[in-house]
View 1 (cartoon, rainbow, N blue to C red):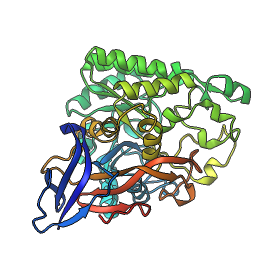
View 2 (view 1 turned 120 degrees about the vertical axis):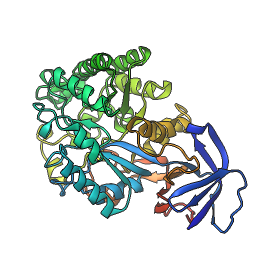
View 3 (view 1 turned 180 degrees about the vertical axis):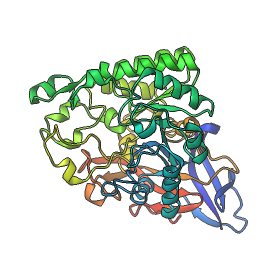
Length: 435
């Protein structure tokens, strides 16, 4: 089936395009992109004024929880949340049960993704067996099975030697090593950012230096090995300094930041609801100076990617004392509205830059299809409604878990539709669009 998306504003930074274009979809591929394309038998879909056609968004840091933790999320529910949030693809972390440290687990995840038939799923394999930091996983086997990167996310690679070996091994396959940067000896039993608000509430702190030390370690090893080191969910201004120095030196170092780290600060520990476990994440919400540094990094190009670190947890797991609750929040269905509201409409960045952060750069870093709307490319498309009013309602989320601090927020800008491989998998009922 052919469809012609006609008359919409197309934003494709990979080709320097920001203007009115038509997009002809033939099956699962983009056949042509241009002005005033003839229908030639294709079904014509008129794109209303104000909507924006973009290459499909890719979330390169998601926890789908399956296998082993299906009470929190499954591949099916997670990818349903993804397409509702405007993501055509997600990269899923390996801290499942069993850990994704061998081909059989990777194959299981890919089979579940094929069965769901929603967003594309790119598994990320473990650096070490069981993510225990002792023995290196068989990275060649993971690559062959379909993994696009490796990480021991949830905690850092245990030793510098093991991280060096991982970088050397992954470098043979041009795979990035994604690191949860943290010094365990500094973190200790910390549960919140080390600062005024944690002290006032009697919560054990985690300093920004705890994260930055891990970043510095990875940067030095990236320089030693020449391999690609990617900083996950960066939150501290000292970490950003290290990333900037690495980029200035021409090292293969990239980084990501989450919407909650460029939106919230540690003041949320005390207000509006003290000890709300939906503001407990790792790395923790930092002070305003760190949050502002993340905004600066997004604006000046130092930060490469916006990723959600979508971390679903069951209500009963979060509904306990702050110290006992697990770290993490869901993010797939709030990332785009938060980014449009707080970054684009604030004037911090322009829409093409947002598309780079959510599509172009994740595709480039993971070396997966997408990131552009060139002829012959996969027809993965995100259509935005930048002026749409969005009310965040956790109870209506497609994710199996509802742990978010953004419940009840009103935001400006959202997702109009999500197309994966030429198939329309989500259309926002609040938008007049028959795609």
